[in-house]
Image (cartoon, rainbow, N blue to C red; front, side):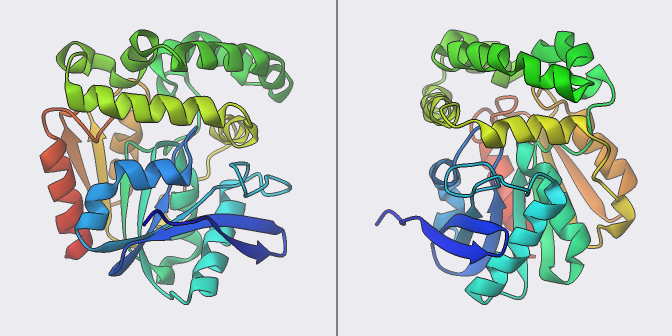
Length: 289
């Protein structure tokens, strides 16, 4: 049965979330431009492995209004309150892509609540240099440095994102990066691309969360490596040019008790490609250890 959206009333506003599966609870933090329903589609393997996925919409996405909750620290507070509401004192965490900042902040602010954490192709470092930005968008770095300019170029970004998201031959090379020639005709990758393109187009219709993500990426650092005390596994395709591999490499260099696994999948699309089985096995083994 398809899980239905549920709501938790927090003093700062409602939080929309899904719960699916049975077993060990895993807080799943979605990336930029997708919904919690998308997470259940692409992370079906975790459900088959016996994990229970708790997937809130981050502030600005769908039924979780942005309001004053504009920082990754505020999102982390919501995750903790949601776990209180659900009766979970400790969980495992899986954060993906643009969900990296609030996943990191949750581990930093509530170390006793995080048993272990997996970050998948995560944004870990703020954009103080073009090398942290998706390769196709590095031309825009001067515009992103100032908040008023970011707001001015939002209509252009929405236009380009809508144009690219609706056309696989434009969208897939951006996400697959250096792996594009390998996977451009792979049925599994093309099926995954259709799911994520549809999610991106839908998210663009109400873009508050996506806009806020960009603001977060461009603001000062949110990562305090010394406060990350849980075991940490970083999973990243070295051919990913959308969230450059250096994001995971940098955090690994800062957190002594972390493990970094370089993968050969489909670039930013870890859920397909040559080493998709290894990707899932590494994550399962780490979460179950």
